[in-house]
Length: 399
Image (tube, rainbow, N blue to C red):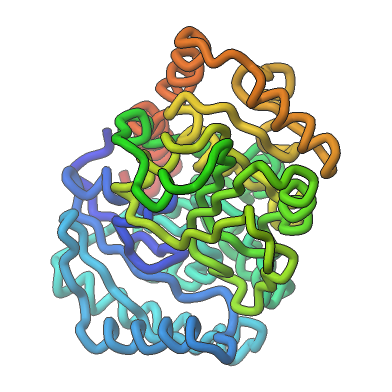
């Protein structure tokens, strides 16, 4: 495991240990052995009118006024003040200056020197070359330019700038690995994995779920129209009114104008809201089968959902739309069943519900998740960073 390093990480989100994304898993595991300053999201799009984005703006202002703050997990957090107009050249220049100044102040305060600059969103590109960093890592987990509401050309320009300056690209899907090619340095394909131990240890289902009739088809994640095929779910619910669709997660995160109308009024669709991360294994344990009903679109074609191995760690049947990132599992129906279109998706669910759920099959799923868990992935990530540091030193850079 990487240790005794100073790390400045630009995150695509606020720090939330109770709803972890890839960045939270990675930095939370590096923090005990390294000195980590996490720069909370500089944002990808301009805020929209509405309570959700207004709350984000107020939260950022409050965090900015507090300055660097310590998280319980041991890392330091910094909320920079930026102008979320990345499509404007003047705003990008201003943001780069604001970001560099804020991070430098925080580094001086915390005694960080020659850090590894670890960037998740391309909006952190302006920091490269300004912190005396010994290495620049672009940890690409998303096709950011395809997200709703962003200025696509501006994000692609920032990403091209970052790819021209970074020493290492870590890509979480095959599509991202093939597309995000650094001008120099190394590139590694390291797909998303699961907190396998967490999801394998489940208690009884929460009371609100236990009161819902079976069979229960579960989804855990962002319920947003740009990501989830809401029309597909509505078609499944209408085709089989005896099935209960249980959707656990925030509504429309990252897409303030997300329209859930296709699901409105369907009595067997249950929007159960976001739940604490500690409780998610119990929710998944209470499902009879788990769904990944993503749209196959420019935004999701490069997506490797964290929930894929989380469901598997719980030993559950999985039914998914044919995401390119999961293509390696196309001929392994014991682990996941793929289906495109409402009729095929209904048939795949029927097959999953009818299949005998033997302990041998559940154990095979858990073993696959165990092989794709965070302890192993953190070793892969650390090894890639050390290789990049050695390569940089060989070129006459900082070791």
